[in-house]
Length: 580
Image (cartoon, rainbow, N blue to C red; front, side, top):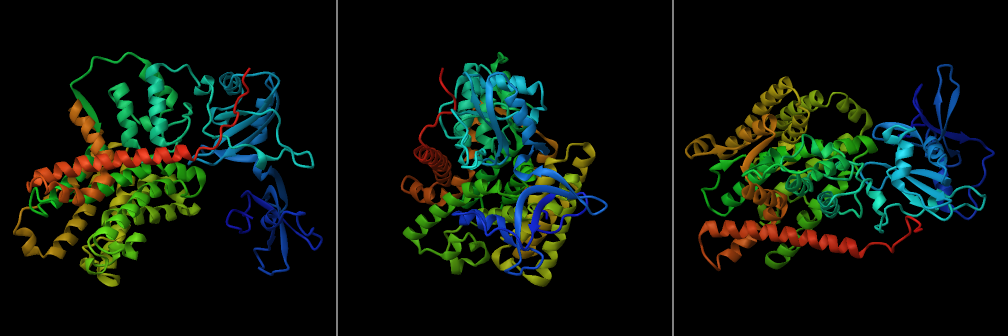
């Protein structure tokens, strides 16, 4: 059977299930393992019809016979390659210093990694082991981490007990060799800063920012650190191994330039949150500048494709999105609970992050529709990408499929508004209204040729035009055209498609990046800081300054608190290497 518990097709690998009236009753004294291995026949559903999940892989041949492929737990998919763990174990165990070895695929992070547990006759350098194994195996088959033990744990039957192996990433102290190269002070600064930003105990310099679990929430801070060391950011730095970035950081930098290149997504995130705050706090007439939320959704879609789609493809599900969702949802829920408790009453819709589906008369004014719509869209996209058939179809031609999906969602939004649910009363703050924008942002990440950029530009005109038309219809055509409106959505999407960076004065770029990385917290707190600013002055510019500075301070405080909490939860140190 395949992963969906359906009969595997010809040539499709699946797990071998054994069906027999002579099966044993289970595992002695281990009810959990018995329930896992002895299952009801998925094709009959009869309680007495039990199958044994063997853990072996097989494939149906053309004549109906079954070819045995090996143990399921002896295979792993690393960076899109299916590998035999026994082959890696053989290469490691073949090294002169290694007496025993077992290799497992660790799935603690978004991207699976190989971990080699070794028993050695004498202390050995992981760097030397990697170098020797890399000469025998492809790069993707070289273990990412080596854990050295006095002895491998065994079951009562004398087999290696993989479930008793210690956690590989235990936040313990690693040797200098585990950094894969002798780091210069600049490179060490990069590694330490990224470890803090990504909230991991150790940076494996063989991996990329994306493989280390980086996402659209952390890339602004990570890019700031990298840019401070390198100056100009390399093309596709997020997909470049940290080892190569560290080598670039070790080289002498050119004379400091007065201008610094600011990535367009970071620049637009900064501009959008500034426009939102200035509009809400009265620095210019409400509604004079529009499209800022659309720009944020575009940037979020591009970040989703840039940092997380590959991890979803690697794992075969969207669990890698949970960390990003939690990073947005947890502070939003806590702050909503605090504000509603102090100034209103707690609304269950806000706690479930669905208050955007209710009018303000029901849920009050202390809710954050942009965040709720963003999370709902991420969940929808994650669920769709979890379906294997759809995921494979999209990844075969990601640009074409995502662009067509954006067009289909555009049409669906119009039809839903006409025939199913008119969201005008909710100011169209619902996921179906912005889903085409989010998917368009994903498609733009793959627009790597001039032809694709022009195609994305054309679809962008349609998507943004539809959003504008719905907005105008909600306000009324006469009321809309009687005032001045500046739409920043279309220039934003064109900038994302055609530009990579924007030159900015160094100090402005650094401050803008700090603001961009604090977008969530500025959005959550700006009305409260407006109230605080009124004790000083009624001028809107003062309120905006309080809101920006206060949001950045809250972001810093929250991130510091999270890092402190994670440090408190660290397990006791375990020995990853024997000291000579």
